[in-house]
Image 1 (spheres, rainbow, N blue to C red):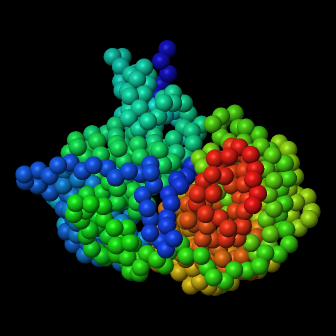
Image 2 (image 1 turned 90 degrees about the vertical axis):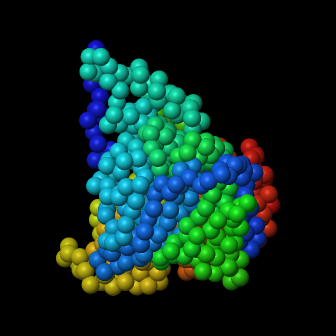
Image 3 (image 1 turned 180 degrees about the horizontal axis):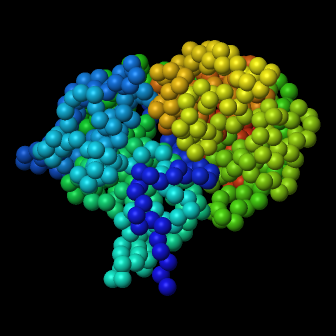
Length: 567
């Protein structure tokens, strides 16, 4: 008997948040000294269609859009347009207003003022479902898949194919899903649970779901943030095919080399206002020009190695022979295979590696999130065995995880409880009650120190941009003054200007004597911030060298090794 589907009547907007933590898959995109960002070999410039005798009529016109939130102006008099068969890059720092504009276009919220015309008619979507019905589909930065359902069920959620007897046609769903996921280069079984997929595979399922919907305009919000270079190139090729099919694409990304490779035009926002439009004009838009338009300063200021660095002290954390257990529910996850590392006080240890190298798994094992099969961990010379994150926190170890939405923030709560959740004892008055004034004063101090842009302490953290959410999480651990702080992809989804601020924060933490382990997929970031660098591959350490002696070519070589080399 065919089983009844739990998805036949669900609405996508009512789905629960993703629950499990998946291994991170990152991108290596090189930057030259001085901040210029060359296009990686895998991110090739996509060919543009030949110019037509007459331009296509405007598909979407945004005219003078303004949006206010509790005394804060998120958007002010923003205008842009996009035509069929055109890829428009929407760029800007975190807090520039990109997310607010996307929510307005996606039907999540109405503008305070302004006018939108879509396909020649006034556009006033009442909900995201209404926006999809009208022809606008949005792929959001944070994944929205249900981990307990299969790939096929996630793709067809709310619109499962129905057979002659009124039941879900599982065979047709599987066949259609197989065809759709093949378009994004996935060769997995469509009936695989999403919880068994890597972050990169889950991102591709999100894209496949969007491609399965016939739409006139696809809005992509950081779709490549968890993809490898090969997967990025595959996505850019898909975007190019959609462009040739006269589908309009609004591409929101912090990865400027990708925008330069694929976009016909760019619209740049800064502080909620229109900073300007950039046209391709026969060739890729120069990256320094994009950066300067976004941040208001020259690109040469980014990724500069700080001149003053603290001197590393004694070993604080030591790991020897660390091995982890494979999770049967995540057969594709990487296991650690005899990892040895030392982390010193006042030092930033950079951890670099390709997809599936085991970087995030190392962080999770130290933080007590994954079970250790063998090996030892010592802290200040004493053996420890954290069985949970709570144990690690009590020992003085903190973790800023790669996936803010599902591993770090409490989306429905305000900024204040998200900040103080790891330090409730410090903000208690001794009688079991919170000392709210002390709690607020601490948040206020970190708000100024980290330049957190927020309306108030009561504002829901999900209303902040990704960069400001990350700053709140950093403030959470600064309030605890940990011995060891592990930061996994600290600038993932953070704009180019805020990256420098995050780097400065990490250097300041090391100067205070905190042992910092930084995991990053961006080699220029690893080189700019790290005092010492280790490389990983397939759950093993393959290389180690001082940061001042490292370069991208040497790191890439070590990341491809199966043996360890030390310089």
